[in-house]
Image (cartoon, rainbow, N blue to C red; front, top):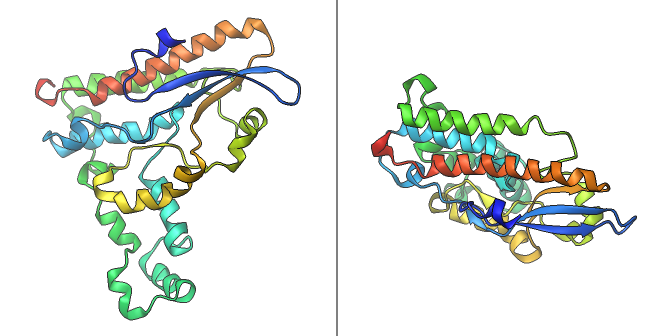
Length: 255
């Protein structure tokens, strides 16, 4: 297992053998020991054209959750909406919620974050509409994105419930009962801390106190003949993450 996971740099994944408290059936859990924003490299800090950066970010946001416990901007927005505005997602409804349920004075609303304020803080490379279509991307980036999406598509061929990256909340609780007390929030995010520090701190508070939902996959192995297939699926997921890693580590000057 260590040899398979060794090339990964974007996240620290571990494998743990578990046994069901109900019937003793063994299982292997893949968990994530990393915490916080993943390093987005040139996508966040480079000076490549925005449409290139947005195309790469969009692909990561759409696909990484297939194997990593990670949340994106829309997940953060939904959490913040519940936390600040009682689930409201437009400014006027949020204002009414703040006045009616939080006792905020109408005169103070200009100093309080509203949904449109949060949206406006997104850098252009986070906005899907800014992404260039594949035909307008440089060859190197286009090929890297194609490898990334092909490796993601390959994961779709894994047998349901019988692979390393299978996620089922009830199954997790059956094997790791203490996770019922944890936050449901994953430990990793694609949201840049620089622009959303306050929101990330607020929604992550429960995870910091009680623990995050850091399971990337859990697969029962009642029969020995399933082990080889589990290893094959683990390699497939790691291949996908290495494609993501390659995308993040591209040198825009060489595209």
